[in-house]
Image (tube, rainbow, N blue to C red):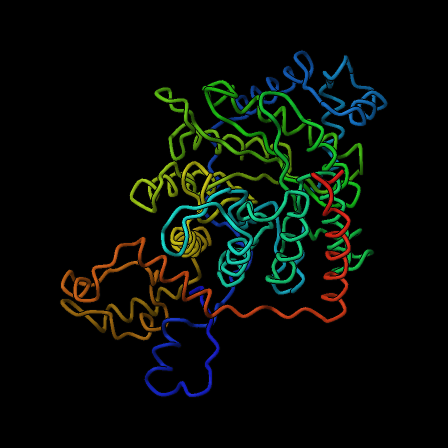
Length: 511
């Protein structure tokens, strides 16, 4: 279960027992250690084919780095730089990415919430960047800072949400120059789980690192990962200045980035899974290689965000088969290169937490986990092609994450001999409801899913999943308890934010 309630004075007897059953304290799930999968679609020849295609793209077509500092860095390293076009020889690229660690520990300010990224480990991260919310009343509206705070709180209370993030929604009521200050400081204080970093600007990245140093200590941040940030490549084949500036800040501070081409299969990449993957691999590897020019050995993550495109309207499509196949291929290629990888899940083009939303979300999650993804972003809440986050769907999705965690944790050791004893004792026509094994090993239950009779469901209000999800979100927010932070850290963080707020107040954007 994902909710926690502290019993207050005066609550006792039956009411307290009911409350304890419906809002038990969360038992936080650790990093998922996958024992199911991964699926490899390609043999060695197929892997080599995609690798050679990616290297051909980088060597012959090249990739644009629209940033003068990056161009100078590539030129000094020995790449072929013509204008903004950089052509990278395969041996140079492979030598650079050879220093990217295959895994890393991702530290939270509460050490008990620290997770692992890479190898057989998978973690779930919050939705990111939606300008709209579907509120606790179900009404769609522009997102606000209060919504970001609420999703941090929901992320803190969730058993399976490992990374609440820093941008669950874009708060439209906060000026752009100040957003990163409000979001990063809120993520650090409202949660004690790992956070993500701002990439709004070079200044925002610097401020994120400084806030992390206040909380974790400068030496600790230099030696350990406390922030992982999301950087998007402009597919096809463009890394822009803003992303590269942020990459330099984080790489220099030894903090990894999810280097993620944004793929609209059939539009920004070829519709072919093999061709699309070859292109996005080239883009992500180029970003990873550049990070190693900045700081050798800094952790980085091969990222991807894959959608299809409707040939009917040109709109993005989630949950279609081809992106699922592409995710399987990306996972296989990441294992070939020995680097962690990131993808997106639980998103939908639906405008309501309805059947389409459920199908799309499931159809995006299964290939990502079966592909062995390490860092799974957008794990709860998205509607409307990632333009909106629904409180109701967020809670429904978060409970589903617990189910995925259980499934991919695989089988546990069982005493089959003792179970055969139960079979012999029960015999033909009996039942196992009263056995010790059944009582001690109940099947996992999602408390938001209704398996009662029609009559009982009807008598209790005939509530839809959307209504149940909204009510659950309200209960969880009501029972939220803020994790403590030492007074000296909280004070220094508040002072930093207040000083920077004044500094940026007159700006139209950080510079």
